[in-house]
Length: 171
Image (tube, rainbow, N blue to C red; front, side, top):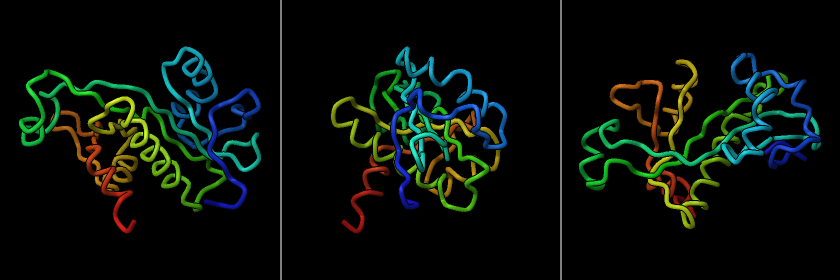
């Protein structure tokens, strides 16, 4: 992690107005909706900041349910007879254009995956789900082992067992 940077929950001290990742829906979410989502417990919003004010990046986490008939059949048939399984949604993940080239996207994803793994000990989650905003984002997630949903190629999943392996390899 770059020196002095930390990841913390969104607070009133964070300068949301100055954030730009170059993708308007992600910028607008942080500027206009993230505070309300956090306040209403619709999403946990985490900020990557060098100084407690500027925002180098952010991501959101929330509970989610995945219908078994939406995921790859070879995975679904091994799971359960229930119609849905619990998951964690990374709803948004973005890095400021001011901090390009520092690996912040990877830092944010790894932190989000660590949090989901820790939380699943208390609130079960079978997988992490993401909705890639474009092809570039989809390729980013695929590099970390995320698999596309058969009928929704921009929706990807990473089974929690895979997340667990990421953090236990080399330990």
